[in-house]
Length: 385
Image (cartoon, rainbow, N blue to C red; front, side):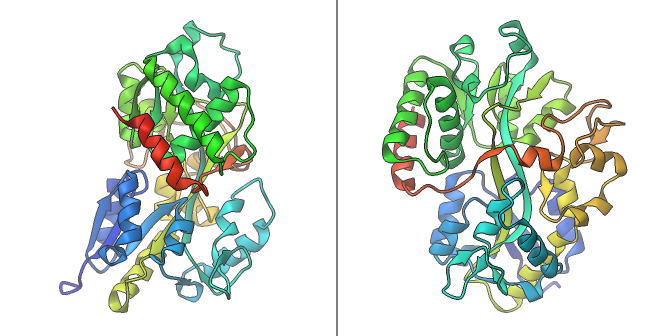
């Protein structure tokens, strides 16, 4: 469609690697422009200027984008597999062991609010989910016993001052810093996903104290920066799984932690701008349905993510890939990353086990806290030079 305006898609780099962008452009009958945004500024742009995009790959932001009226309802009748989404929601309501938060605020209720009760429209198309923790280098075992239980407290441990790092995102970073504060300071927060002002102060004051001591090498914005920090000598740091896969492919002796305190759960979904209409809206639905065909979710599964509808993913993965990534089995052969490059060595077993086992370890889920404005102000005090 030469005369069709391009569909404007915004998302983080880990959800839109080049292989997905290239294939979407090749398989969909209209031009697409992709804009990668790995910072909070991307979300601010989505909320304040919905006319500047058509599709947004969101994670943990739907409450904010929906309240700001930046996104529009998605009609399930126009989604391939809409019945499967309804069935998954009904099956998982109350199941806190898998991806309950996806369905907590998925459906548009009659009063316009978001909820778990199945309805004809959804606020976001569920695509991917997973759990994150932190990574550590094999050299750490020269400083600690190999059998020492993994703990979020390692992020703050003075034994490797100057060789630790955090992610820069204030929402995710605050949650991980709160997990580390609990573990290192022997405190307990009532709700890690919704800290009070006093709790935010406690976490940030701890971060600032550690920063002044030179504890943190620096913070990172995306998985590529995280991988580069580890290559430059960081021993312990926050890590998205794609960064770990990249390091593993490069032959680095690095481990993903399975912390005793649990992991940080997340889900990533696709939203449609409130300003998109007409044939651009038709194109947006075509793009959403392209994601539903299973191949994009299989592609991202090769970097450690899980498709929300796994049975749509399975036909696009080999038996060995499925057994490793979803079944928790040791790799029976060398497995590729999303770009087709050898990444997982034969015999490697993913820490945490199968899909269900790993998701059951979600201690807290990504979320915007009630005191988000205050959180942002305090976080800026921490990251400021």
